Amino acid sequence: MPSEKTHGNVLWPDVSTREGCLRAAWTAATLALLVSVARAGWALVDWAAAPVAGATPWAFMDAALFAVIALGLWKLSRVAAIAGLALYVVGHVWRLATTDSWLPAATVFLAIFFAHGVRATFSHAWLLRCARRRGAELQDCLQEEPEGFGGRGPG
Image (cartoon, rainbow, N blue to C red; front, side, top):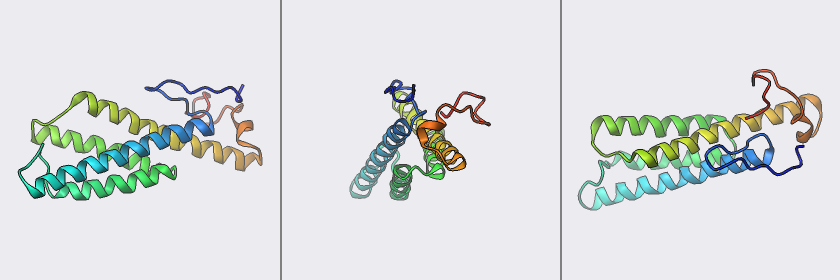
């Protein structure tokens, strides 16, 4: 029943309801903001003193991009969700290829949450599209088996 509260778990949140989508997307947005602050901090330390963990002045641009991505995720933008995941993964692959600086557990953990942001934004868009198409409430769309989701519902 859609009225039951299901939160999934931390590593695979439930995005089959609007509340679940919001929770997963906003978690990804919060992490994008934290990544932005960390990258800006590393860039400031690099600018003021010696290089830290391969930080360069380009880290300011990276921090700005993650701040914009955080805003996009907060507003449930699918483009921002994909850009956040891609920028995070590509940035860490590049860092691994060019330096020895890599934190595998933190990298995988954050990449999973950026992936949940993608899941949440696409699931939310599906729920809205269903509701508009049927002129129904979002909760009514949870009972439908959508095309393109393999009959498993959103998320």
